[in-house]
Image (cartoon, rainbow, N blue to C red; front, side):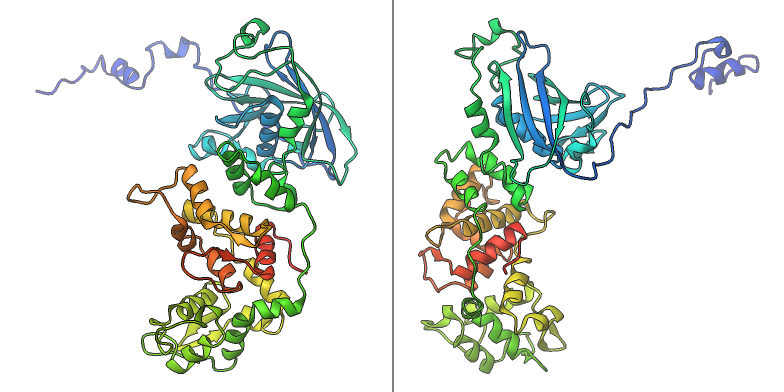
Length: 465
């Protein structure tokens, strides 16, 4: 038999089911949860340089740095500046906030990528500019790094200075005392820090600025994607040779100009295919391959086919022709339609414009950010090393070593090698190879001047002129 409340008990029973006390009318109402504040400001109409004092909260004696930051920096770049100012290595999570503690329910938090992807409440730091958080001297932004050791810092705007075109993203102008090192525990007093640092009173502004102005940290100024900057910063802790910083510095030097005649020579196979595809285009076989006469003709202009000892009549036997033709399709220069290989509108536009062709290719070299992470990072490293080469060599085996240092592995668990880097980098490797002198087997790829220029343009977004 089912137990049911009696008629007289029914009202009391219904109230209990509703989660209310019988005398709910007389009870104190349950308070509403606190509401998030909204303190974000509009960006300033013109860039400026912000002089900001950064204090490590509750340190005794105070540990602080005064830094100058470009107002148009995003907060993820401000985070990197703080890391350099305090000698930390960006090993842990972080967040900023306006209106109080970054974990307070009423503040407005700005999150690191991990917290944002995990669904924490707040905006991503990468999308918030510094001058959306402070405008006037006295404005405050809070920051927490390493949720375990819990380094809480307060950023206070001291002065708004005129912009300077040569200003670094961030530089330290003053400070006091040594910062606690990574993973030392929540040590804030001089006595505690004396157990983990040689001299808690020591502050080395030259070492601080060397970290803050390392060319790698400044790469966003020349248009380099932030994902590559993050990757290079992590790799600097693995490859301590200084090579990454030296390469990054080269991107701040003027680009080498490439004569149109040089572009035409290095892009000859591309131009040949585009001109051959004019009008009615290439007729294709029923299986979608080039016909023998066109394979043979293409073999005459492709450097990789000069010493080819196999058949030059079928694409599946002359795989350099097949790969090059497919690369032109991936680059959006050719397309298949109704049994023919035709020019795209983009291909027709650049057919007699080698500078435009080089810039079109450059614009197609980066892998989309939402693609396979290995493909994205392999393409970024290829373009970075190609754009900054001094000896024309693209060291793909070294790139594989760096990707392994980032914990990339094959599905079998084996480390990646140079062939994986070459095969799985989108258009990056194939496109640079196609405009460079031919190479054989294990020999490294030696890049043409055009390939170096295209890699730089693809990486930074600054076109070849």
